[in-house]
Length: 184
Image (tube, rainbow, N blue to C red; front, side, top):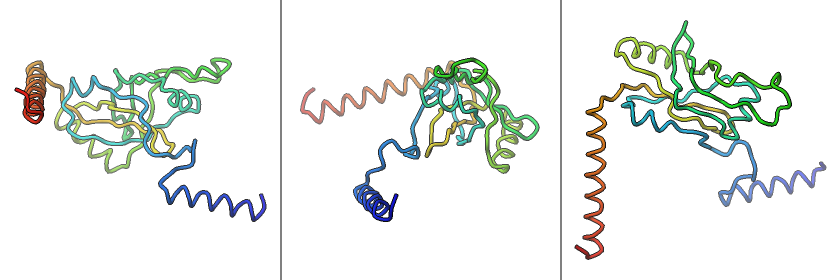
């Protein structure tokens, strides 16, 4: 690439940046959600959330990009000063020729957090009898991240209250919509 080609490429990049456009097909394009755990939000009251990096193998990353992941049973645990994610199933990448190049689908994956956050989470887990649940998996600027939440289990009575509150909000919204449109 000569000097002229580099200048043209820079001019095009500057035009894209000026008009708020990103380079097509780029890896670092913000947040791309791969999977969410809707059951966790239904069954648990989420008190606090944390964003963690994950230690993954190459085939796991490729499989994540194809959204071949299940979070329904995923939870976190702190062992010997390290946080681990258990129960997350990443299906083997289909394009690998043999199983020897792939990965174990439900292995324990190490989560990456700052030491201060890890100590704070560990203290709250022990003190308040909480659980660590995986809420979502996503790519942030090309890096795989998992959002975990400190959660307290809901009782059946709490779930009924949530349903009643949601129904009341929906009915109030319908009434306001009818009033705004002049109908009764």
